[in-house]
Every structure is written in C-alpha cells, then in structure tokens.
View 1 (cartoon, rainbow, N blue to C red):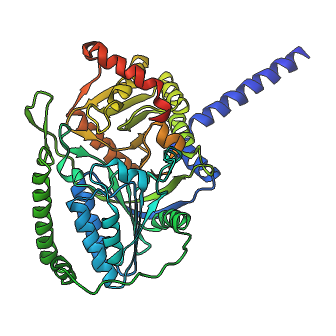
View 2: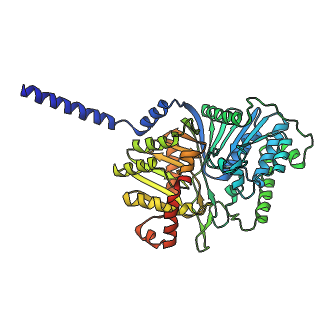
Length: 473
C-alpha cells in the first residue's frame, strides 16, 4: 500500500511538473492572442502596416490618401487646433466634398477647449458650409462639471473604408514645429490598410451615431465658390510634382503662422535644446517600412468595455517572458497596471520605461518621476527623454507583439475616457518600435540615485502632491 502511495505521489508530481513546463512554453503573444479572442475582439490578418514616427510622416501620408479618396473620409480627433496645418486639412477636405466624397468629422468639445487655438463657432460654421459634416463630441453646457468625464480621446481617420490612421497625434502645427520651452514634439502614429481599418470604421460609425443620431447623412449644400487654394488643389489629379509644389506652399504658410506665434520651436526635426538653451542634434530615426501583420483593435467605451485597457496591459505584462519596453507621456498607471509591472520585475523580466522630462501639462512630469523612481528601485530601467516632448503611447513585449494607440497610462485613459489601441502581433513591427526606443535612449538620461537626489525638494513635493490626485490626472 505504501509503495502504491509513493508511486501515486511520484506520478502526481511528474504530471504537475510537466504541466508547469508546458505552460512555460506558451509564448507571450499566444497568451495575449487568446485573451483578445476571449474578449470577443476580432483579430484580422493580412493588414499592411506602416509606423509613422513624426508629424511630417503622418501628414504627408494622410494628405496623400485623402487626396486620392473616391468615396468617403471619416475623421475623429480629440482636437483640431485652429492653425495652418488644420487649415490645409480642411481646405483639402472641402475640395474632396466638392468632388462628391462624403466627409464626416468628430472632435471632442473639451479637447477643443483645452488647446490655445480652438475652433470657434464661426470656424465651425464656415467648415460646414464647405460640405464637411462637422460635429462636436458632447458639447459642454451648464453646469459644465458634469462634462469632465468621459471625453473622446481617440484619434481615428478612415479613408474609403480600407485605409486607416490611428495613434497619439491630433491635428496641430506643433507636431511639425514643436512648442515653446518644450522643443520638438515626438509622437507615434500608424497607417493601416486592410481589414483592421474596417474595425476602426465601426468605432467611428458608433461614435458618429451617438453624437448625431444619424446612420447615413447626405452631404450638406456646398458653396460653389472656389478660393485660390481650392482651385490649386482641384487641379491635382495625381501628378506628384504638382502635389509636392502644393505642399511647399502649405509649408510656407505654416512657417508664417509659426512666426506670428512668437516663441515656437520651429526647428528641424532632429534639433532640440537642453535646459540651459544649448542647441543639440538628436539622433535620426530609421526610415519606416511597410509590414504585413495581424491586428486587433481594442476600444474602450465607458460602461460597455470600461476595463479593456487595464486588463490588456495587465495581461500583456503578466505574459512577458523576456522583455518589456514602455514609452508613455503621462506615466501614472492605475494599481492594476502598476502591480503587473512590479510582478514582471519580480519575475526577472527586463522592464524598460521611457518618460519625457518636458510636458505640455505642468505637474505630470513630477508625478511620473515619482512613480518611475519607485519602479526603478524595484528593478526597472528608466530613461528620461530630454530631446523634446515624447507623446508616444507604445508597449512592446518579448519582441513578439506591441501596441500603438491613444491610451495614456493614467487614470483618465484607463478609467474614464473613450480610447482606442491597435494590438499588433508581428515581430517585424515590434522590432522596429524596439529599435526606435534604443535610438531614443541616445537622447535620454538613465535615471539613477544621483539624478533623483539632485531633484529639488519642491519638485519632489509637487510629485507627491500630484500622486494624491492621480485618480483624476
């Protein structure tokens, strides 16, 4: 009997060990792939993907696709800043509307108010008169405070139902020319051609119906009057030289606009300034390439999929077996995500985090400094990006999969706002982002005990105070 008992326990231990060993062989991307499927989210294959690592890349690509649109153009942004690049965009959209293309645009009312050159009522009226169906997301009315949450923070453009753009960029000059005291604005966007674009189209359609109660809309009466720029754009029928000349004209308008806004950076893409005002040359990123990838689109909708982003980040971090790379501008993750990062560190995963030292929101760097320093003490490697404001929201795991989207690692994005991220299951795309991270390390400082100790008591206090209200940041 004792012998049989011993044999039973040996077999039990053997089976348990074999199960654990088998579990360890399941790759991180497989774990996340199955999790995405368990959420009822489609994973589309054969998508043609290109990463866009600057505002110049994004607008060059997007304007070309808009120019070639034949049927429909849909845009959903947190804000359209009323400046030269937005004017060029709306001029081009007006031309397409006059050519019979349906043009719809959504923008968040709070996002519009939050920038220093918002679209005003007269601008909205003029845009609509030109055939662009423009609507505000949740217009802000008395008592105002009830409109703070949730907001539409998504950035989506879909062209002819098959080409889409998404990521962290809105529409503003500073993606091209930087900001005062910040310098160049670094950000990440992507172009998707294929079935995943249809998932983004569904998200836009749902948002459009929510705000307008219109499933299908007719193009409003369009003014027959063409201004000079419209006439120029109408003549562009695909001739590359003509289009490039038009962009030169647009670029000169942009530069003039920047000069009128005294103090803008208006420097080259690879030039920044240090804290003491010294001009520094930053490292140039490798040219983007097209890849073919499987993509899942995650859509955070309050009261419908409120936990989707938190659960995704926690699942991805818990699945990691080798390495994690994170870039996020307002780094103040909720407890669920923070604890997942800590678990990854404890398991011996190489965790790399990059945050910008400059920001468009005053106290957010201090809150982020405090949080990343605690993670550094636990074993994370933290880089402080000095060459401008890094607004990218990306995660790469084990070199196998990644995400690009609108979601910040803060409470607003993870708990309150409408957000959208593309999860890309492709080693080549992931590697391109990892290489971008490694290039950005050259323009960053490693956070150490010495650097932390050099921070003033006041800045540390601000970080502590900001952490107390992190639930609304």
